[in-house]
Image (cartoon, rainbow, N blue to C red; front, side, top):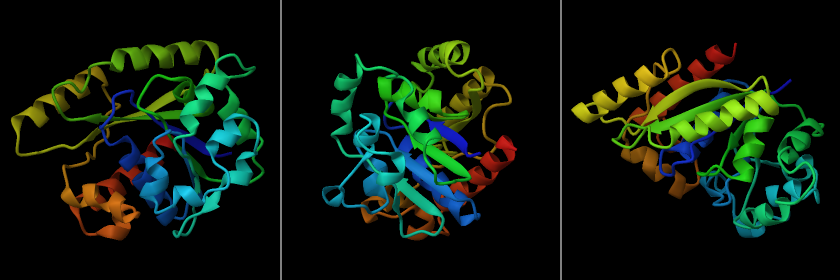
Amino acid sequence: MSTIIAVTNQKGGVGKTTSSINIAYYLSKMGKRTLLIDFDPQGNATSGLGVDKQSLEATMADVVLNEKQLADVIIATEHKDLWLAPSTPTLANTEVELAQANHRFSRLKFAIQNCPREFDFIIIDSPPSLSLLTVNGLIAARYVLLPVQAEFYALEGLGQLLETMKLIRKNLNPTLDLVGVLPTMVDSRTSLSSQVLAEISKHFPAKVFKNTIPRNVRLAEAPSHGVPIGVYDRFSKGARAYKAVTKEVIERVG
């Protein structure tokens, strides 16, 4: 059985895709067979792993519309034990087609269940919205990892996401659980970061990761080179942080 984690926050710019790519990468480095599903129509996880979107013959849009099996779109990356199910902006168009479709909330869940390939971990990079695609990710997942930027508006909108999680747990996916809240873009030199961290810990007691992700130029540069931070600069603060967070993820899911 794969451990399926949806990396989700309806707020954009919080390090969701960066977290998805780098946690998936470090899981693979730790010997875990890992699949990263790019389920965000922006397709940043796809380009962030150096994949040319123009060259793709099949993507997650085809899977969601039941035109392809998940196994048909999975591609190997340059990194051992790390595979990618890619996306392009055409995924955004599927939401309109899905709106009236049968099993529209469970397409991703069924796709994963019917995939003959075995993975230790499946990481889902969700869109920055509470859309049909995001709900598909939450129904398919066992855990939610919630990246939260250490800034003033960090907790704004999280109530709606948590309410959605509660409804999904009650009606569609009773085992869904929050694996943890990951503070990102933390600047330890500012009192604001400390205040936000304290506020996050107050709202999510025992759920905040012990390790946090710092503001780090190397982390911001890595996607433009199409590689995870562990390849771009494995000695950077960002690389060390994501490696530590990944170890914590493994501990938390048991």
